[in-house]
Length: 159
Image (cartoon, rainbow, N blue to C red):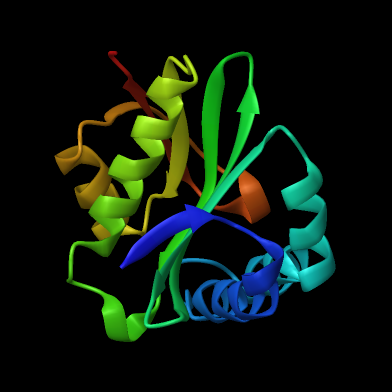
C-alpha cells in the first residue's frame, strides 16, 4: 500500500472511486446531495485541485489500483477535510487510519496546527472512527448542507 499525493496518473480512477463512494451513501445523504457532490469530482475538477496550492489531496494505491482518497483544503494554517473514502473491498484493513495518519504527518511537517472536518449525524461509523482517532466533537449544526445535520470535529496537532 502506498499513500501519495493525488496526481495526473491516477485522476480518472480517483474520480470514479470518489463518485462511487459518494453515490453509495444512500440513507446518509439525500439523492440531491449525492448527485451534486459527485459532480465536483470529475477528472477536470481533480486536475484543478492538483494545481491549487491550497488543496491537500492524497490517494491510497495498492497493486496499481486507487483504493482510497482524502481531500482537504488549507485555510489559515488549518486543514479542512472535505471527503474521505475507501473502496468497499478494502475496508476494515486499517487503510483509513493509515491515510489519516499520513495526512496528519504531512500537516505537522508543514506547520499546520489543526484539522477540522464534519460528519453527517447519521454517519455513525465515521463519527466512531474520528472520535477513536483523537478528534473532538465541537458542535452540532442542524439543517446545514442540503438540510442535513452535522457534527463539526477538530484535532489539534502537536509537533
